[in-house]
Length: 248
Length: 248
Image (tube, rainbow over all chains, first blue to last red; front, side, top):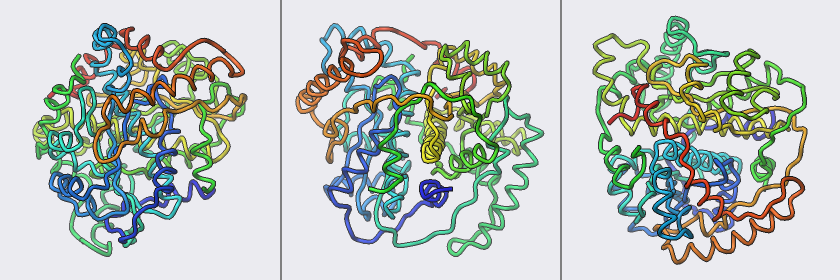
C-alpha cells in the first residue's frame, strides 16, 4: 500500500462541491496528467474541453439534469476525436484514411484513449484532495451535447467529469466480489458466478438500507433488470454514425 | 505535485520485464484498485482475466506478436462484459433486457467501464515500481482472442496489460501540445490546431532522431497518414455484432 493506492481505493463520486474554483495551474496539471496516459499507436484520439462559460454550463445542465454540471470547481468534457489525425493530410489522403477511421475498431480506440486519459485526470484530482464525478448523463441527448460543443465530423462527446472541493463525504459504495470480476485463464462459468452475485446482493441490500442518505430497499440484481428493461439513449447509434464513426 | 502525480507523469510503456512474477497479494491489490474506478450506474461492465497458463499465453502471443505477452510478471486481459448483468434474470427478463444491452450506447458503457478500471490498475502498478504495457495488438485477431478466453455472448475481449518489474528504461514519449488537446468552451477551429501540430512534428522528428534505440526519420503526421491508410482490424465490427453488442 502507498498513498497512490490509498487515493485509488478511497474513490467515491462527489456530487456536491464548495464554490471555490480550480486554479489555472491545477487545471493544467490535471490535463498534463491526462495526456501522459497510454494511447494506442500514439494516436491520442481524444480532446478535452474545459467549460467556464456559464451559458454553456447551463446548456449542458439541461442535457444532464445534474446540478453538479453547473456547480463545481471545474468541468471537463472528454470527446473521442479522430478528426485531429487528418488535419494535416491532403484531401486525397483524407479520403483514403476514411475507411479505417470510420471502423468499429477505431471507434473502440477513441473511446479507450479518452477513458484512459480521463481516469488519469480523475486520480490526479483526487490525489490533490479534490473530488470528482463522471457525467455519462450528458449522453441523455448526445445530439445536443455535441452541438453545444460544436464538434466536427469524426469527433463525438463521451462524458464529463465535474471536479471540485468536496462538500460531502458519501460512504464508499461496494464493488462486486473480486472473484466475480477477476477470472483466471478463462471466462468463469455462469454457475460459479451466480452464487457470488447472490452474496453481493445481500451486501448491497444492507448498504442501501443502512447508508446515511437516500436509504431504500434494493439489490444489484433488481437495479440491473430495471435499468436494462428501460431502453434509453437508443439515439446514440445513429448519432455516432452521423459523425462518420463506427460505420463498418 | 505529489507522488501520485509524479507516478502518472512518469509513465512510459515497458516492453521488457525481469523474470520475477507478481505475488498473489500484488495481483489482488491491483485488481482491487481496478474495481474502485467509477462505473456507469454501478454496472461494473467488465471482467478481468489473469493469465498464468503458459499454453494460453502462447496462444495469445500468436495473436499479438509481442514477446511481452509471454514474458512478463503477470498478464491481465480486460473484457467488456454485459453478460454478467443478466445472470440472475429469468429468461423472460433476459429477453426484455436485450434491446438495451445490445445498443451502441451500452457498447460505449462497457468499453469506458473496462478502460477506467484498467487505468486504475496501471497507475496502481506503476506506483509499486512495476512497469506496464497495454496490448491492443490482441485485437489483431479478435475472434481468436475471444475464443482463447472462452467469452460468452455479450462479452468481448478489449486489450491486455502486461505488468512486471522493468528491465528497460525507455525515454518519455512526447505528447501533443496541451493547447491541441485541451480546448476551452468549444471545439477549437482547425486553423488554430494546425500550427500546434506543425510544432509537434518538429518535436517528434527530433525525438525519433535522437532517442537511444530504434532511431528513425518520422513525424506524427506521417505516422497517422500511414496508419490510417492501412486498413486493419476491419473484422472487429462483425465480431462485436456476432457477440450481440453494438447492434442498434
